[in-house]
Image (tube, rainbow over all chains, first blue to last red; front, side, top):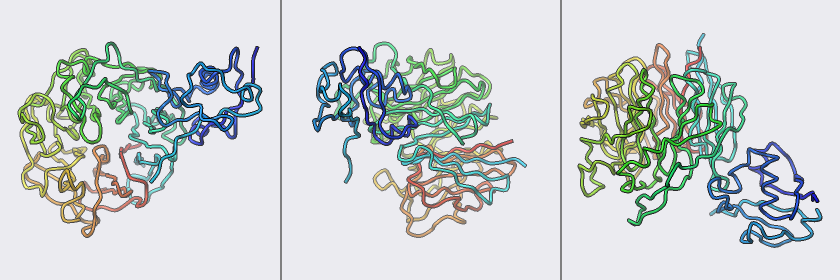
Length: 101
Length: 371
């Protein structure tokens, strides 16, 4: 079974991928962080290494994952995402961490 | 008429500055990759339309861009800089050992010999090579795995491999420099490496004669005399006449021998340019005067070049990759500043004028002489 998952990328990654607005990716099987990001990287290979480290596949330190008003950044990569994300009712958001001064 | 294309990497994007051979009227194009740190942009000496850019971000990591039309448009190529073999450890600031970890590409060096070959110098210090135009990268790991590797430690800017010099005839001979490990040379295409730091003396390390640990800021050479190397070290301007086997100081009458870039004139192998900076704690020019110093004698005797450069209240820096020369008959010299200016001289440094004044802080300047 495949689910169409909505994903919102930060502006720099939208520019790199040459897209505007949110995207949709088809995810086979259980909808997890890892499955969604794998699907994003297959569709937009120029994003390889920009969200997850190339060597470790771990989330880059200044990248956050949000959905349904919840910070999912520290969830296990293979943990299921919220049902509203699975059903396409809410987007999975990749966010650049706040920085400034 | 031949053209001139200056490639500028900044804290917030890349810029192309183009002119004809006269180099008096310039067109400014950019920013490309706005908002990203562009550590280096450099064109292939074999194919002037091919240009590489190192695009990097503390948030989103490393991207390598390649252009086939001189930087007008770009496409991403490979960004997998995985260290080969057992990763090992190097010294950290606190004296502990820390595993080698890739952060970014500081410098891209397209080969003199082959349009498809390009080298990348990385932080943590490592040298990568691509033979397919940047799609796939392979570490020349014998450098990082040198016996002295566990003794290497970062300078304040990170442990970066920032200088890659390819011998103009022998493609297997490379000279690289690392902050703060020193200079190294291979004669077999990277299968083995030799530290070439004899004669360097660095007050920042306990054993001034150490084989490694010297904070080399930049090395340059003239292709007609590839055994003559010029080095701007953390402190001291140095010269080697034996491909780095031995070095001697040529700081001479410079007002300060601290600085970052060094460049050799395109047609005069003994003419060298540096930008003195007051000290490692100040990082701005002595007396608030931006002065390029030129030696026509391979060092020791230096003259200040000031015409067209600010001589009052100037407190910026010129970084290690931010100076370059063109190949026109009247050699052009270019440098960019942390204040966002790019200055050009079309007469070997006698006079200067800003091409552009208000860019983001300039990280790198390279120039292509277009046929």
